[in-house]
Length: 130
Image 1 (cartoon, rainbow, N blue to C red):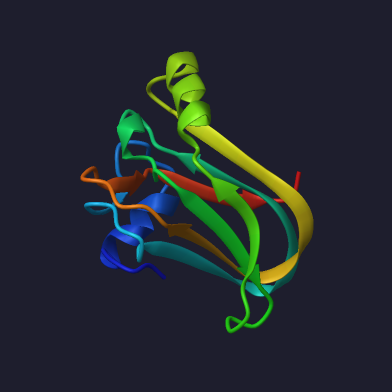
Image 2 (tube, rainbow, N blue to C red):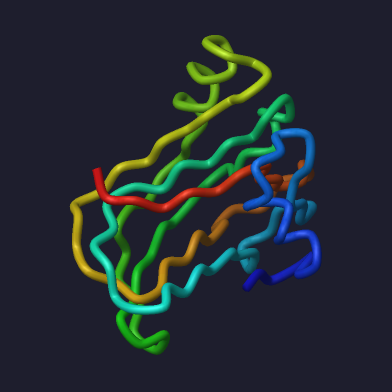
């Protein structure tokens, strides 16, 4: 689920870097959540921004939950430096991997916690355990 552009959320998992889920301008209430069929070990989120690297969240919190009621922060910070490195390395992909301590979760949520005039966009989104 997502706090905005619910129909566009399918673009974040369509294997096409030319399409994106887009939400904005960025505000502290924007979020994207993924629910798995069963609990699984998670330890990283990969966001592909494609050629729109400027659409990254300015301040991101990645949270996990086993029940959707209680959320635990797994990572918090600005991905700006990682986005810059990724854009310089491969500007058509802008692949950013955010790792955190692996643990079991049924849900994972990416939450923007800062306001910015730019829109948040995700071309592709993956969750895995490194």
